[in-house]
Amino acid sequence: MSTNHLNNVKTPFVDSPEDGAQRRLEQLGYPQELNRGLSVFGNVVMALSNVSPVMAAFVYALAAFATVGAVTAPAAILQGINVILIGLILAELGSMYPISGGLYSIINYVLPKPLVFIAVFTFMIQAFIYPPSIAMGVAQYLQILFPQLPQGAVACSVISALTLIIALLIGLNSIVTSNRVAKIFLALQMVVIFVFLYICFANPQRSLGDVIFHAEMMNESGTGMSGATFGAVLMGIGILCAAIDGYPASLGFSEETKGSCRNVGKAVLISAATTAVIIVLVLVMGIVAAPDLLAFLASASPLLYTAQAYMGTAGATIINVGIIISSFGCLVVIINYMARVLYTGARDRIWPGKMNQALMKVSGKGKVPWAATILIAAVDCVLVFASDIVSLITFGGMAAATVYLLIAIGSINSRIQDKISTRPFKMPLFPLPSILVIVFLAVAIISQTPMDLAIVGGLLVIALIYYFVYIRPREKREGRHED
Image (cartoon, rainbow, N blue to C red; front, side, top):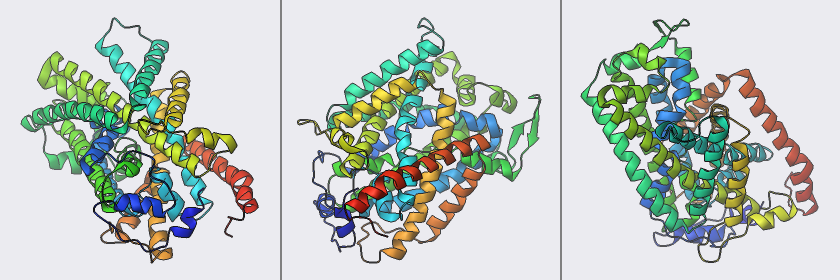
């Protein structure tokens, strides 16, 4: 971890609309090495491409529909509110620490040790969870769209690996090139979202009040519907942590966002709010417009069932294409984002020895952290042969909930411990957003299965061991450890 930030974090800083983010980065002890070519809009485009609303609703939310049925609607609304509250927290902290490590960098500043390393490990593991699950989603829908392609799990893994390699080649170009690709893919999937919402609003089959306040679940036999308890809503919130996610990618491009530190805060808040509104609308309206709720929940893809009911086979094909496009666009962005996280970690010397030097390598022309980008793609190419999409998504949701919970705690700690640092984007109504997020996510985590809790617990133990065995002794040897 960099020693510079320990000395400079509490130095008063005056933001500037011209180059505030770059000057703050340099004040924190980091050189400007990446290309500052993104506007606030460009940053939001990259973040929303990482979110991939079509993929989030049509793929990631399948677990919620299968588990809590139509209760997904009220759960999605509550999780959407939670996401906006998290956006307020990240806007404040991201504007204070505009560093490309995103959540990782913020964690380093706002949490006490060894909580830092619990959060860091839980967050960084997502670099090797989300990309392979997205690539596998692309492969599965390609197999559906083109039945002449080889079918089966092995073929799906091969197609997933090829998809990762193509995304890698795009990601090794400059951030401007990646942003152009992201804009095209995002525009195409927003067309899909618009068409889907149009048919849903035009064909309501039940009232919004019934969907929200009288949500039902499929009974155990699968032959009818039954009322749901509030406990099911709470469970749904936990499951949807993975579906309504991805917006913190905005922070991963902090060192490439032009202008003031406040621009970084604006970008992440806009990304979070847009993510919440779009995905919640799609999930809720898909239920409102479903011709038959039992058939909707029994379908392998409930939202696709609603689309096909009003658009026919052609509609299903359009949605399939939209999922493939949006998923691939998301893959390009998330590899870029997570590569910058690993790059920042190496710059802070969080990894062993020469691994730090390797992961810090940046291309001369495109200013891209190419070594970190290749590492993520290479490991993920292996994982698509050794895991399944459902397990990856479920575990990814747990990891995300844990990190956001710690960030919310850190936001309170930051206000208490650091009363000097400038906050270019100040969170309104503090500490209410932080407290609500902590409550939301504590419930989300507790609601998960014992197996998921055991896996996350195991990771936390590994993080603590790594800290006490490697990081803490090294910092003591270098005279940097603060008791």
